[in-house]
Length: 151
Ligand code: ADP
Ligand code: MG
Image 1 (cartoon, protein in one colour):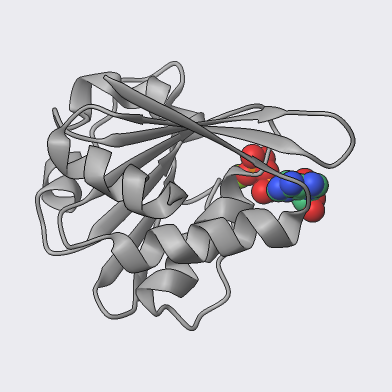
Image 2: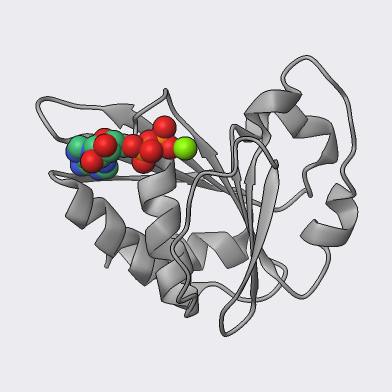
């Protein structure tokens, strides 16, 4: 496991970090997001989408579980919070192994379905408007992305 931490001090900074991350991602990549309500998961996701070239306004897909967008590559935004007490499979395999890039908010609720290689991001509240954004890469591929992102 390879870990790195970034602190942002405003929603805009989190968005910008997301844009940079999105521009480094490629089809088939899967990003997991954890953190309390209001931590900034969706804010980071909006940036990632922008970095992939998605023009649409990203909204949290809480009631639909997954929303699909078109950018340079297909972009899948999942919020699996609703699956906490369920083992429903919405066809995860096809999303994770397809031509798109996937971001999963509350990924710990679907660990059984996640691919082996993911870039895991945990966001925690810091003082005032700061957020501690922790990256964990479980493959060399994602380690390089984290290094590039934080360099
Ligand atoms: P989540 O998806 O984790 O529930 P959201 O991204 O929807 O969180 O909301 C984060 C909230 O926190 C927004 O209202 C945002 O403006 C605010 N905020 C304050 N500081 C930050 C920061 N540094 N990064 C991200 N969001 C921040
Ligand atoms: Mg959210």
